[in-house]
Amino acid sequence: MSIVHSDGLGQFQQDNATTHASRVAIKWLQEHSSDFRHFHWLPKSPKMNIIEDIRDALLHAVENRSRPPRTLMYLWTALKDEWCELPPRYLQTLVESMPHRVAALLCVRGDPTRY
Image 1: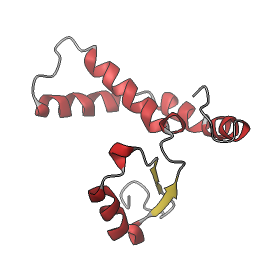
Image 2 (image 1 turned 90 degrees about the horizontal axis):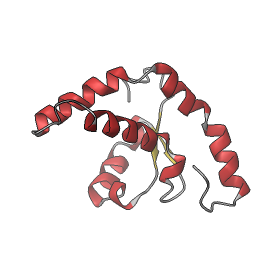
Image 3 (image 1 turned 45 degrees about the horizontal axis):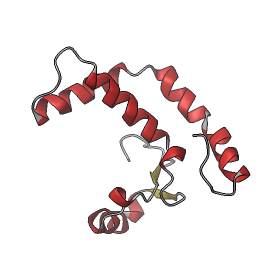
Image 4 (image 1 turned 60 degrees about the vertical axis):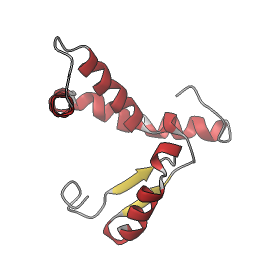
């Protein structure tokens, strides 16, 4: 976090999905809570988390490569390469979509939204 947000303004977003809320992850967050701010998000609300959109874009890009990854190292390399190819405007659009996503969530009082 200190590398990405050296100004100290970064926040860690955790959506509390079952796979993200393991004892190990929770313990690590507690042990490092003084290193960054932790943004508490609604439980199990992946559609409100732009990271899910980015993950889907990366997976789609890797799956469409002419040579699919056959080893973990090649997968890691492919994901890093595809991350560098994501257009900055795509990422900015996702960030800018957050007010609309939150408003949609508030309108349905936390029920599922179209996101």
